[in-house]
Image (cartoon, rainbow over all chains, first blue to last red):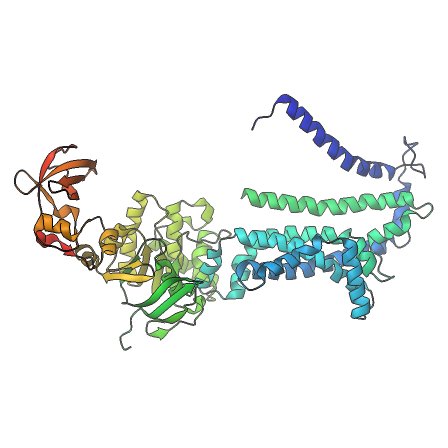
Length: 265
Length: 330
């Protein structure tokens, strides 16, 4: 479809404005992390790497990053196992309530985080009598991380030729061997993409985390929130924000690249 | 049952929801036989194949393989292998790995299975393509790889689900010859599903004609063609003239529903029944004429090409004999 010159210019400008609105503030954060003024005044009075050095020594920052990594890694691992099993069950078998299960699995990603957070907080503490720990955070994160894994795996399985699994069984392979040698190799890149997205989701999650973390489980987003309004900490928070952006963007970038190379194949 | 048929089906039935795909089927297939299941799509032939392979569980009835009841066995416990219509080659493995797959899951080491896989590939004359991925092969080559993969594990019975359906005519004819040779060479039972009646007739020792989940007729290709048991078989196997009792009365002086093959009607110079040509189709080796006789019966006639050149609205004389009529059950 050919567009007129006027239409191209208009649509291009709109797209440019939208992207600018999204990414200019992020750029400002990046620049401000080198701003020599404590109050982040514009234009920059000068450049400094002082904040980056201070960030490294900031109280509890490194441990917050470690915690976030641990939570994200554990959530991703559990989501990968459960999401794969779910996608296999829902794509390969017909059973009563299949559609309902599918809906219930995907729903948490659409639920407001604050609802999930309060609900889980209640369930953990009041009903189950659990202490809020890193473990409860991981369980909470899995409820929505599982969705990205499941969606990716399910889409791949639906496109996959079912005859491949039948051919494998026909040639003498049992269920596990068929999964290991035929299904999993076809599924691998989809699981990797889903896993990266799950990791990204968990790594910067704050609302659900706030309600399900105990006092001594400080993830990076929580650390940032705690430090943002403390006197003299704002420049350090800028540094951390930049780091967080990079860590969140990388998984998305790789997940996209994987999906597009798969589509080209 | 004393005699060990390669496959014995007893009272086999399969329903999907309210539709009956296979209806109370009894069938014995001898060892070493080239057996075809012929029928239009939806006639249940592929379902029978999938039941034999174990991909579907029958609603009722039993399946025996060489005298042994395998009705409840999983596909991987049955000594039958399938060549799939779309080949179902593993896209992430090369040709040699595909062909060696069945050997691999049986725990044969890499050297052993590569040797056996190569042997199987030589049988289908593809030994030099072992390193290729399935996506780098032509349709005909994929089809041979699928064949090699299925025979590499030396099954007792090979199930072929319209294996030539996706190939063009030239390649299909060539593969038909190769399949027949392969079957003779290996001496294993082939069960071949097709909707192409020509293919079924030219390849098979016996053919079962399927219609609506039942076998309409079972016999050698010649029996099916010469003596169709029903209107369905007469129409489905080859082309034919289906005549109503009043039409046979007019043409032959006998009154019955019957089939008359177009090639049994001869075009002669004089005498016989007079008819006018309505349509002529030139087929290369023959000409097909649609004619209307003086007494108003439409017939299809197959005339060999060298006889003469026919044209529309030309008057011809037809010779036909009541002995060529095959009566059909009402």
